[in-house]
Length: 300
Image (cartoon, rainbow, N blue to C red; front, top):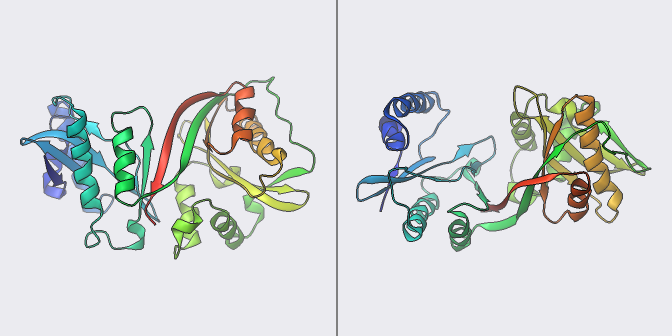
């Protein structure tokens, strides 16, 4: 097994044997332009070869605060996959990613999302721990069809205030201080974390709201459109400061439903921490369907 770091002049290698020739050439040209503009950086695209032939490709994308390995690696359609080879190939990438000489900026910190049910799931969990990545948590993705008759009452004593009612500095502070990943973002500008969430959706900030319970700040929700078609709303991030009462968790689910109904959207997507069982039960009682799950790892 041999690891190749894809650079500007070798983009064609990255797509060869993974796509038909015409498609591979078009993608190669696009990636070249991305390298030239700075939209792509060396050290974020990897190709592993087996006896000189493409076996596996992987890519990492960047936002304002970190790198994120979110996409599951892809094995070449022309390769014959084997579990030992796959683990070795992924291990070569992890070995490269530990280079302090190559990744030396705070924005180079790496977050890894490992989706369940793939050929890479178990191997990547094991290797992540071996290389010192901390297991942050398990998350479940749910899809919920919004119908006219769906019950979505907000419990008494809880109300929501738009983010836009607060000064920008207060918005940045709330999202930073109440972020469940805060300890991994030391020395990170709160403005950049806030911008990451803005960049993840369309019409974002207009839909975000602060939660109050008995006149005390108790969390926030950050739903957004994730497609230009605006045919669904996704809960990108949320926080519940006080989880001792079930009402806050119930309110989050029901408020997202109300926002979808107000925006005339018939589908909601919510990504929930598996520890938030009250929210999960509330969703399942309303007919939500589990569509996937993943584990999050980060190296502090």
